[in-house]
Length: 287
Image (cartoon, rainbow, N blue to C red; front, side):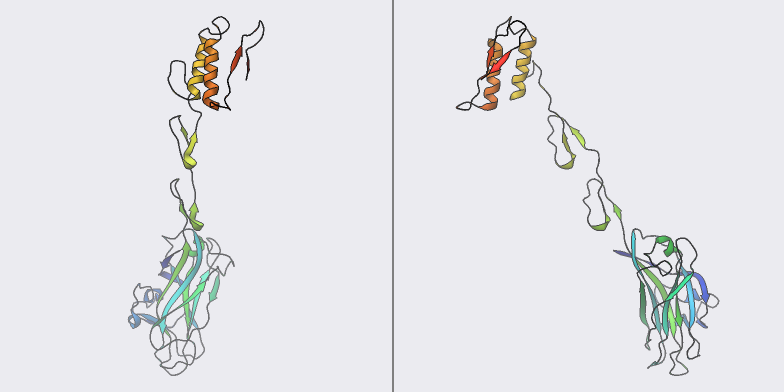
């Protein structure tokens, strides 16, 4: 598995958090888009009303590294409250998603989070797209908006909630194409095979690539050993006139050698005999 981190790059459909400190006046996303959090140098913060939630949404850059199956997304927010002992939750992490390449139309928020009086990282995970109820697609990731809702922590006039950084991590399993020499494993294994190479009589071959073809037959003037050589000699004898006219001696000798070399000598030996063909008949072999 792998992750790709996407950060705010433009304002989303909502920009309601009232307090903005730093370089984000008029563009809230610039206060929370940094890769390294700058804490109180730039942040957005809730108002003073006790039970009022204020929400910002931010567009994020499209993915550039991820591929394959999306397992889930996690949206992170780095927040805190100046109050030492907050008595009311001050944060909800939010997203706005859509279907396919369509514009986002569904807002979904995580559970309320109680903040501490020092900056800490909070996150909420979505394994499926709330707009579809199904697994995320990369088109939907590219259209995603992420954000936060903040409210006062309700314990003093300084009980505002603050947030300095927001981003999303996309967790995915990449699929890598395999070549014929790669074995591959797991869900990303794509096993491809090249066309088997034809083998000649001198090639042994091995594995899936070994597709030996019929060994070459010897002709009369070729040497060799084994059954190929005997058969070649037998055929040569017939082709050059051996038969009834030339006598049976040479052919009979060849047949004896053939069967003896194949079946062995001893009690199991097979001696081939040849009978002179009669007119209109064929050559007979028996043991």
